Image (cartoon, rainbow, N blue to C red):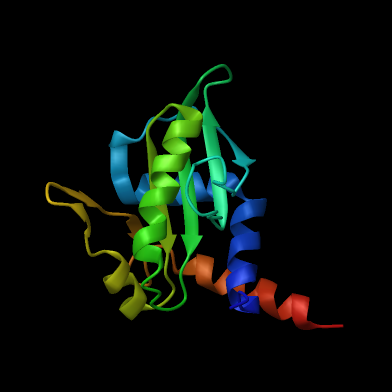
Length: 158
């Protein structure tokens, strides 16, 4: 299924503003996330990992100029998609292997229903779980949704 114009508008907004993604992520996780890192958009493909090809919406590589310090996979999720419960852990593991540093998956969910669904821990085995960080409409950043809607509307005009 092809991504919707709304989905693409949100992804493009985030891709064009990687520092906004970092700010949103830092607001969600708090002081545990280091400051002073430079964000650059990285490849969304995890085909280097020896599994079926997976591609995220946006991948940021955060470094101090010399060393990778953090990887951030950002996924825009407009609806429930059970396949994502298998893809998100792959994104995290693949990026961690590629960058050799800590990583997280940030799910941007404009719908409260989708945000609630995405926040549930994902069982990865008898002793492990994976849990993405979720930014939903109940969180502080409603301006992201408004900007994405404006961007989507401007792209639909001839």
